[in-house]
Image (cartoon, rainbow, N blue to C red; front, side):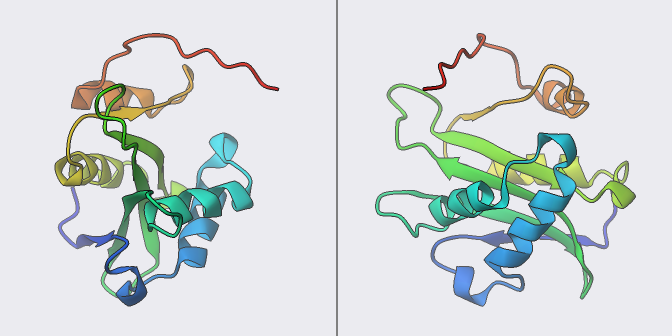
Length: 151
């Protein structure tokens, strides 16, 4: 791990004082999620949710960077509000700049996200996503197969 990397926690309460904007975060995620990216407008909706811009919704965003440097990595965690039914938290996005992969930034973001979240954490990962190995090393397991019906 690189000790020069810091992680900023952005919440509904402090997002106006954050060192990066919501647009900066959306641009980073859109650029660095590679083939797993969502359209930018969907990323913005997720960030709105995490920052409490929709009633009864909230979460937090973690931004990794070096002092006064560009964003190196981002993770976005949403509070599901459904602790009686599913895990309390859903890790929606985690991305690291491709030029800095292998420095432990993804692991730092995962560990900080788990530490910061209140309660259990779920995430969705494609079976062929290389990040799946990191999630399994940290302790995530496959509980069941998710099925979807698109209408």
